[in-house]
Amino acid sequence: MSHAAPECFAYPSHIAFFSNRVTELPIIPSDWALNITNIASEWVEQQFLAHIADRPLVEPPVKLDAVTLLSCGQLALRMADAYKHPVKLDIDIVRYNEALAKRESGMNDAQEQALLTRFPPPKKIFLDRPSVVIDSGYRIILWYLPDALSPWVQSNMYSATVGMGDLLKRSINDKRGNWRTLGSNFQPAESPHITPGCINIAPCWFQQGHECYGPPPENPDDGFKPEISATLKGDRSVTMITAMQRPALLASAALRVMHLQLYWALVRTHIELGRCLHWSNRDVQQELP
Image (cartoon, rainbow, N blue to C red; front, side):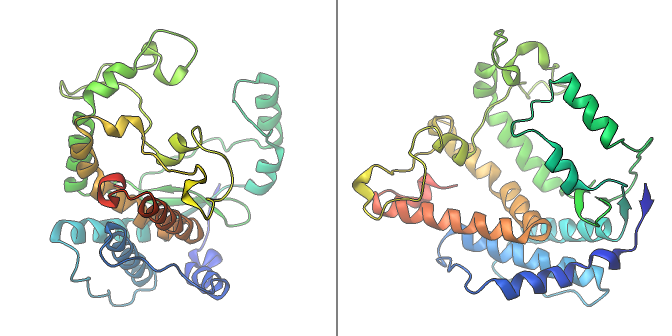
């Protein structure tokens, strides 16, 4: 393990490389919540670049409320601080990925030992400040971002979790078929308002089990009709979605800095989902958080 100079993996050069390969960015309707998310994400990226280059900060967008602005500013500052303090490991993450099986479970002792032998971990890694962990090829493999979320965002997340209490409680079972919801794997919550449990509200995870694979057909009557998770169709769905809006916005903003290509893939996916919902004569504001 060693420390590397930030110049070795300059973020601005990555941005320029990606921008040169992108011929056309998607157009986001101005009245969509996704447009506000994109405005906030772009500003976080601009603030991040200003921090790492020691340039003047960019003026905040007028469309963002004060709490969102302060939360975005704190996120950008913590990410820049982490970027300026890389910790280098003597491991090639590409070679490590190639050594993995197609469906790694982590339960094969022989495979795990073979990986440890071929890619021995460092004796000790202690991160006591915002940092990025990079491999031998200067690829970022981990962002360590303590205090990246403002108290307001943490409060939003707490409220959303409290609102999911009934769903979380019903998710627990004593069957060993699914370790994610096995009761013995959960510890009692420190707060009496928090209920242990595990639910999945990711739209893609839900959708992949209900539709055929491949791109949406041109004719919406051919069977491709997006649905939201059954978990979000309950009585408290609006409350949960509202409480998750700001944390979700911050997650998208962080993704724009961490993985720009994946960020734009996410934006395009949301736009296509909106298009499909429009075809189905559904209310986009109710169906999409």
